[in-house]
Amino acid sequence: MLYEKLKPAIDKILAFHIKNAPGVIMGVYMVDYAYELMDSLYPDRDSYTLNALSETRVCLIDSIQVMTGCTVGNKYLRLDALDIGRYALILYNRDTGSGYRVYMDINKIDKDKYPQLYAFFNKSRDYKSASRKKLSEETISEFYRAERSVLSYQKVKVNLSAKDDIVAAAICVSCGESFLVSSDTLVDKPMCSYCGRLALGRFVPFTVTEQ
Ligand SMILES: [Zn+2]
Image (cartoon, rainbow, N blue to C red; front, side, top):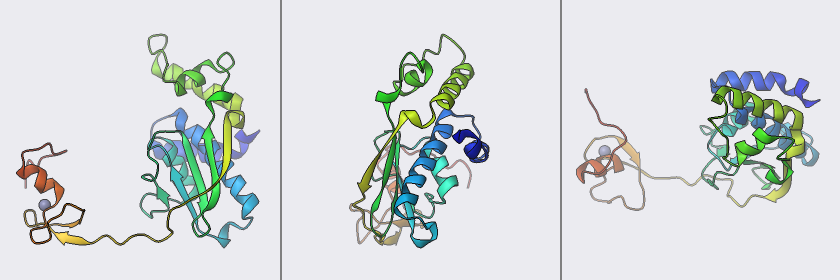
């Protein structure tokens, strides 16, 4: 049973995530699996720099961040490389690019044996049949029965450079704050995209209500 081994990580990440989400628990199993595969390639975890790619921006990334120390903040976790919403992650050696991709394998989820788990990934959960909480609990208990049997893996080579590109910064002529230059920043009159949008009367995600 993997459950005994993973229970401490599950408790820790659910507390970090605040919400009781099935995806967090599945994420713990997925990261554990990928890590174990990496151990077969590189038995000494201290001998290399581990990096991660997530193909989704939901629950899974919290499992990756807490279990591996690869975070959005330290940039060892990349979310932008393949942001397509597949429930999948890659752990890899930053210097060699070699790693493993672990994914939720829909073909392995038996619809009759694991109906809620199946519905969860086919976006066919019937919220009228039971409360969201009840459906989540059923999804979780089905996953605990399935464990790794619904996961698959691939050996991969990651084609991203280990070094970060240095992005130039400029001071916005409107707000006076430092921002990262993009391809459409004017060199002689740099303006951040927030101020640029305001100037054009376009949508901005927030407005300042008190200075
Ligand atoms: Zn500005």
